[in-house]
Every structure is written in C-alpha cells, then in structure tokens.
Amino acid sequence: AQTVTQSQPEMSVQEAETVTLSCTYDTSESDYYLFWYKQPPSRQMILVIRQEAYKQQNATENRFSVNFQKAAKSFSLKISDSQLGDAAMYFCAYYGEWDTGNQFYFGTGTSLTVIP
Amino acid sequence: GAVVSQHPSRVICKSGTSVKIECRSLDFQATTMFWYRQFPKKSLMLMATSNEGSKATYEQGVEKDKFLINHASLTLSTLTVTSAHPEDSSFYICSARNGTGFLHEQYFGPGTRLTVT
Image 1 (spheres, rainbow over the protein chains, first blue to last red):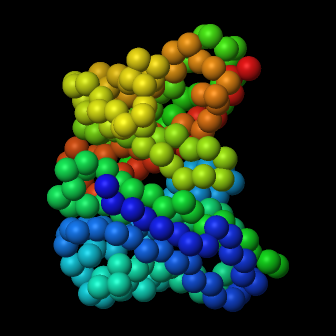
Image 2: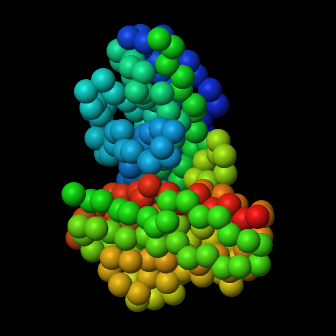
C-alpha cells in the first residue's frame, strides 16, 4: 500500500502571510495524482488543488500553489496571503493510476490556524 | 455540478440498534462510491469501495457483516451499521466517482455524524 506522510500536525500563520504545508509519499508507480483537500469545521471535504505526476509544472489555483518534487516524493502546499477562511484541516492525498487497489490514500492531516 | 449528499447529517441511536446512512450523487451517475470513517482530528480511513450492482470490497479489518453496504443504483449507496455499539460512534463520509469522469476524481458528501448511546 502507498503511504502519505504529513509531518506537521498543526501549523499557524498570521493573516495575509504565507504558509507551507508539507507532504511526502511513498510509491513505486510512475503515473499518479496528488491532491490537497481542505476540511473546514463543517467537515465537508473540499478539493484545493491537484497535481498530475507526469506534469513537471507545479499546479496553482489562485492563492494556492504546490511544490512538486517527484524524485524526492514531496508535495508541499503553499498558501499565500492567508485568510481567516483558510483555517481548516488540510489533507494530502495520493491516487495511483494503475494501483490495483484503485483507492485514494490520505495523510494524517495538518490543522491550520490563521491568526488575525 | 458533481454534488454528493448524505442523509442524515447527524444521527443518535441506542446501542444494539441499526442505522442506515444514505449517499446520493445528485447530478451524475456514480459507478463507484467509497465509504470512509473519520475519528476526531484524524484522517479518513477507507472502509469499503462499492460498485453499482456488485458486492462491496471491504478493507482489511472492516467487518462486512457489521457495516452493510448496498449500491443498488447509479445514484445511491447505503451504509447500514448493524447492532451499533458506542465504539461505532464516528464521522462517516462517502465519496462518489463519476462513471463518465476520470478515475482520479471523487466528490465527497458532507458526512454523517453517528453517536451511539
């Protein structure tokens, strides 16, 4: 089974500042997808950003961007100009294109606090 | 588009009773649905994968006789917790994969909080 590791259980950032959440994963696959999901207090899982492993360019979505280092199996999320609404649990997730399990693997999550 | 609903959002039941949770894809046909369990401040743990019209595939350690999953139509999957006990109290989340979409795309329901007294 694949493993996804988030080594930061909790992080905090000042409003309007930038924060980076870390994620590493282990796989022998070459084709896969990586995701960052946000889970606010409502508990609804929201897709923040997605990265295809075959793409060298880092994905960006407005204030959210990733630093994808395929060789290092690292996939960090950078949140710029942090807003109060960014406070949530963030989960890194992996999906293998050819994984026989055909499932998503989630990290343990990082709780982000935004300080006004 | 790609909305997934769950019902109920919260349920309290007595120990020994059964409770059913519904997961519906509202605007697409979901050939595959996933059921996750999440403990407070923990990650999502995949319980089972259900494909429409066939038996669910359960993850190791998940009791299939206790957590009955039915995926009878392309828009509805149900999770029934049978003979519930307090340790079954948890947050249950479903997700659905669009049958005509990419395999890596899944859409999450809002979750159901189960409390067993």
